[in-house]
Length: 296
Image (cartoon, rainbow, N blue to C red; front, side, top):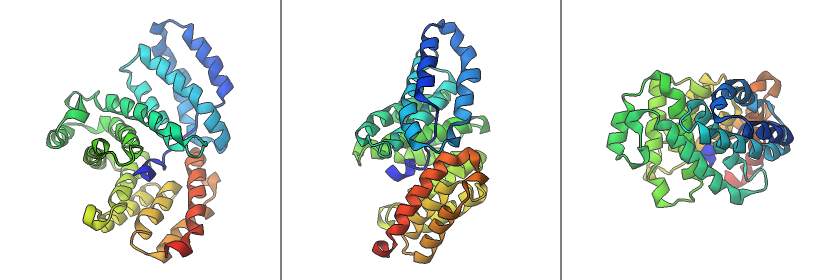
């Protein structure tokens, strides 16, 4: 499950610049926060994925997280801030092993879940989603319209981040079917959202488990193929996940090698707005390709 989350890291900016920004924020009146969200936070988020320097990401993210936490104290129900907070904590939690601090991942994952559930809970019928029975949760999702897709998708990923870092704890794993339902609802409303991200999630979800434990390899393949189409084969995490969670699970060596080689050959300049996730996916592809003789 941890690998489901690993496909979604993104970048913020230089740490020193954000520390200066934070000092300015602390001297502003709480009522001014709403005026800062779009002109000062959103442009940062817009350019997160364009960064290729992983060390800079690891050093810079904490200041951005502190900024978001501080702004959410004064605007706890602001949807834009909750979106950015969920995305940031989800990404940074899954980046911790790459940053050399794997022990921090679980703490960050807890915050990703907190913001994710608050985001989902902005839809009144889904308030207290964690406590709702699965049947009631699924029924409530049917009343959610297309305008809420971003909340469902990112809220689901924040929740899934915590589950993925729970190391199989029953209290966490029991929530997975709810995340599945969230992603299925995203597909029903807008399957194109975030490069077919719900298809990618479900491809991994159905492909990562043995058939006897609920795995559905052919359904997994269909989701991966659809995600590749929707992402125009430019979102490289899809290629790598397809290899790792379908081709390897079904012992399809030819597909495994072909997908990974396609990922490694991809020109990053063709998708500059996806530089960081694609760089990280290429790193993963290289490692997986080196294991081919051990796997098959």
